[in-house]
Image 1 (cartoon, rainbow, N blue to C red):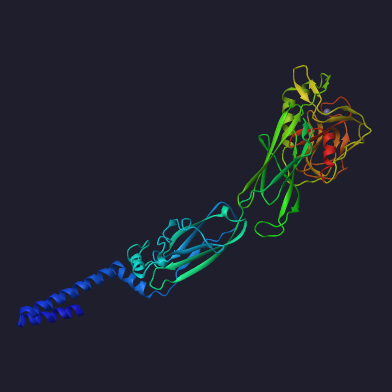
Image 2 (spheres, rainbow, N blue to C red):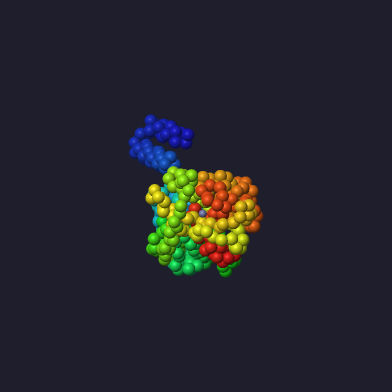
Length: 470
Ligand SMILES: [Zn+2]
């Protein structure tokens, strides 16, 4: 409006007077129009708004930083947003009061891209706001993103404070600071692995004890296979690294066994533990496996039973028994030593692991031991557990299988009758059935097996070892 009125006014004198005065007036009008056009252009481009912001901004910058949960190790990257975009940046980054190397801070993103802005002279800051801006002009709600990097290996394990200060590039240099607490841990957990004996005869169980000096996620292997860890108890271990006191650390047991016919060699048991920060500690133990010379049994199978001893029947039942006894229940159902299923006075007729060579070339190792007892003698559960199988099998006849938890199972075979049902819990000493001669049997006896994760183990060795597990 003003410009148009002035333009109308300048036209009139030119018409009446002409000459130098009119020319000067026209030049002044053109200059005013040019300035007006430039101002309009600046406003349109946003630079005018930037100048107004630079002059009058009273709003301090805003910092948004991600909370640092849990203990951390190695290089820590903290994403930081600073608002307004392009008009503010990180001025100082401190850990425990000491400024960290600026090369570590704000290496990614633009918030810190005006490094010495807080020290720069006013025109340099204005220049930055107008020209070196990172974000869109006028983007008051937009943020510049940066990542503050902290090398935690240079810090002692424990609690620390990260202080971030942002400054804006306006004439008054408003500042905002935030503090973030974080915990570092660059020390791997220490694991100790102890075997009950350094030498393990094939077919006999060995006990391993595993501990870590701090809470850790622990995995173990025995040879190529995963080794299930059984939580024995929780132990208080001083103060946790995050200051929580006390830290409870599980003490683990692991049970190891190799099949009775295994040749000698070394079984490598390896454990690794990862703490909450991700540090990994390791422990290894080589167990010497001793071969056990198998006693050979001259077995005469009556013609009527010959079809049950070898071939598909034997293979299928062996596979069924392995499947029934392989699962590792995390809960231990028993407490204290296992007991014999029959009075010790009854004679053993075949020992554990004895080798049987059949006429057709089939070779079997006795998976338990046999006790001759009068028909109808009650057979007792060796320890607390749960019946997982109660039924008739071709070789073992009427059979009960008890799951004791932790991968330990007992098997009671050739029963005259079974007094238990699958799924039923049983107590140590509870009658499971009566001695009989069902299946592949030539007279009343109990065939008793102890299995660890499907592998038949020496029942006597298990009875002894079970006493050392509290
Ligand atoms: Zn037997």
